[in-house]
Length: 201
Image (cartoon, rainbow, N blue to C red; front, side, top):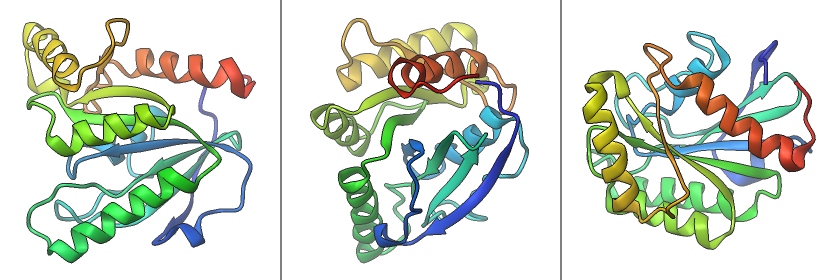
């Protein structure tokens, strides 16, 4: 897809506030500070449309972005940040779970992991839930510019093994800073959307 227009739609604190729309939704899920907002900006070639919190763990809302009037990118709250209260962590978890459970427009989940580290238990749980729910998904390894090419390849293999991905599934290494891997990731997103969504470039 060639992104011609992109705009912020709204922020939602609960699923009752989600937009009334028939557009397909591509949700970005992952730990706090994994780079969801940065990846969205890189995909739409904008610097600051998607904004992360000023401090790690501060993105607490479901943020909607309109892409060409054809799809919505949905930036979900990050999970797994230790310096918040248990009640807040449970609240964020409920928000994410409720969205994934009830949103009929949800078409594709982008599962983000930091390429520098092994996936966490929360990452594995999210992957298992997504698979059990039979949702389309893409595993994205962010911050690939922080490693050498050989390390990138090794860590993608490690992530794939750690999550238990099928043999034919690929981990997509990307860098929001250098835009490395962004065209390949768009090709993968398009392959899902064009298959059933019938969205034209």
